[in-house]
Length: 252
Image (tube, rainbow, N blue to C red; front, top):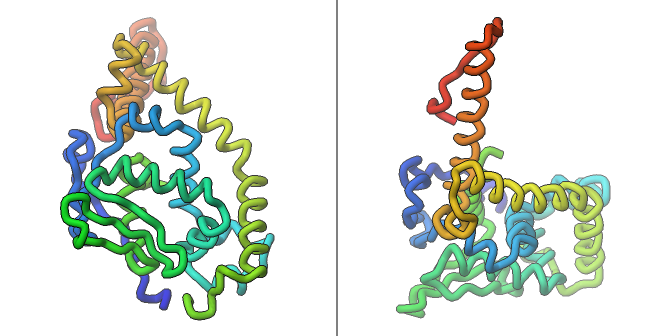
């Protein structure tokens, strides 16, 4: 089954990302609304980061806590479904996030049939199902708009006590590895927003309401590159040597 899973990352046009425009996912027949910082603020950054961590869960993290052959019996997507089966809070966080970026749809998770479904609000007969076969397409689009792109069912019984034990091991392993990293990421996220607002001389509220997540990270990197250029230029004018000056408006 797994050799049929679509793994090629989709490519979104750069101008589409930078403009904040809605994105038609032709492969899935879904319209993705790029998330704004204010959307994340309303949702809560902890829930946002948790939803992204769930979407990007990698089964390789489990090797060591569990036997490799046990881990590789099923796809990343089915491990995610197992985690959602046992963690109601993660279900809620994931659905909340998906409904932010897919505003035209009611979204649900069918844990028994291993799928996430998108039901068009205007035409409820129009239903798109995300399974292990097309999940990577969805994941690829989400990771790009969130600036993260660079970086067997029949025998899989989530009702069993064994599955619950495995899910517990997943959670323990993830918490052990990621607790410090997530803590740092949360503080950096808010601090970076404040820093960019200060650097661009914009009210903090304006930044939250005006920037998508992609635009924010892209503008932040551009601003940092411009600041570095200015500092190096001052050093050159002061007589410093052996300094390589790179244009701040080149590709990031």
